[in-house]
Image 1 (cartoon, helix red, strand yellow):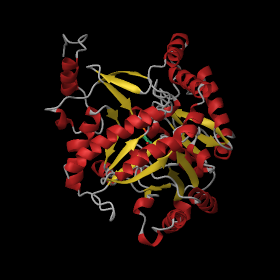
Image 2 (image 1 turned 120 degrees about the vertical axis):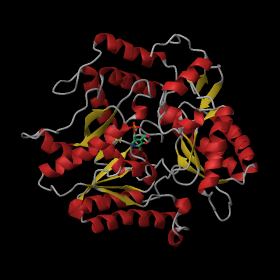
Image 3 (image 1 turned 180 degrees about the vertical axis):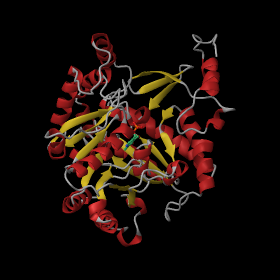
Image 4 (image 1 turned 135 degrees about the horizontal axis):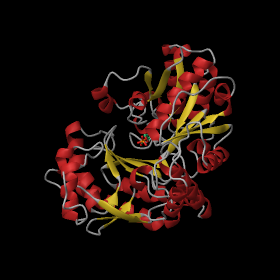
Length: 463
Ligand SMILES: Cc1ncc(COP(=O)(O)O)c(C=O)c1O
C-alpha cells in the first residue's frame, strides 16, 4: 500500500494504522476493534508517555527489560558510535571488539567457572541454544541418549519450537503440537498452593519439590535426561521464589545423575534480584546461565548463554564444532549498548539500590494484603507477584469465566488508565506482576501501591 500518513504521528492515525496493519504479540486483536491500541511514544526514567502525552509508571520495565530506565542518552550514543565504526559483522568464524569485551565482562561477573559466552538475539534463542549445546555435548562425550529436558509446571521459557517444548504452559503449546520430543514437567515452587502434606513447612515443601526432580529423572531414565531448566524465581504463575534449600538439593540431584542445571535468567539476571545473576542471590552454581532482556536494558536486542569450562571442553579441543549460529547474534551495536548499560549499573550502583530498597518495596506492596481480593504478595528484589483470590481464608480462586471478566474485562484496562504499566495475567492463578526499573525508590513504590489499591478496590465491587 501507499501511505499519505507516513509522517503523521497524531494519536488517532497511529492507533488506526496499528489496528489495520500491526500484529501484536500474545494479543487478542479483536479486542482492539472497538478500543484504542495503547501506543507508547517515549520514555524518561521510570516513566513512559503515550500519544496524548499521558504519563505511566513503568512498573514492568516494559517486559522485565528496562533495568536502568528510559531515555539514557549515553547508552543510546554508545550504540550510535558503534554503528558508525562497525555496524555489523558476524560471529561466524570472526570476532569483533565489543563481543569480545562483553563476553569477557560477563565471564567475570558470572559465578564459578561459567566463562564461555555464546550470544543470541533474545531469550527463546538462548534457551534453545542451551538445549542444542547440551544435546551435542552429550553426543560428543559418548552419552548420545541424553536429550530430555525437565522444567517446571507453568514456567515460561520462550516460544520458538524448541523453547516452547521446554515451556510448561499447555495453552500456548497445544496449537503447535507436535513439538520436539523430550520436554518433561516437574512441580514448581508455588508455596501458596503447596500440596496439603507440606503446606505448613516451606523447607519440607522445597525438599519435596526438588525431590520430584529426582523422581522424574528416575522415571524417565537417567541416561535419557540432558538438563533441567529452572528460573531462580519463576515468573509465570506470579513469582515463585525458591524455598530454602531447594537449589542446593537440585544441584545434588543433577550431580548424582550427570544432568546439567540450566539457570534460565532471562528475567532474573542483571539486577532484578539485587545481583548480576539470580543464582548468586540463592547461592547455587549452574552449568549454564541463559540471559537476555536486562543485559541491554532494551536499548538494543541481545541474549545468550554462559557456559562452564567443563561443558566447553569438548568443543574447545579436537575437531568438534558447535553446529549452531544466528546471523545477528552478538550484534556489534547490541554488544556496545550492553557494555554501556553495565557501565550505568556500576556508576549508579543499581544492585545496591535494589538491595537497599527491596524491603521497602516488599513492605509497601504488603500493605495491599488488607484488601479482600489480595491473597498473596510474593517475590524478591524488584520482582513481585500479587495473587488475587475470590475468598481469602480458603484461597478459593476465580473460575475461568470470572478470571476472564476480571483480568481482560477490567483490570488490564483499568490499571493502564490509572497510569500503571504492569501485567494482569492468568497463566496460572490470576496475578498482577511487577518488575519496575532498578532505579525506583519509595516514591515509586507508593505510586504503585496507591494505583493498585484503588483499582483492586473497584475490581472487588465487580465480583
Ligand atoms: C525465563 C524466560 N525464558 C525465556 C524467555 C523468552 O525470551 P524472548 O521473549 O526474548 O525470546 C522469557 C521471556 O519472557 C523468559 O521470561
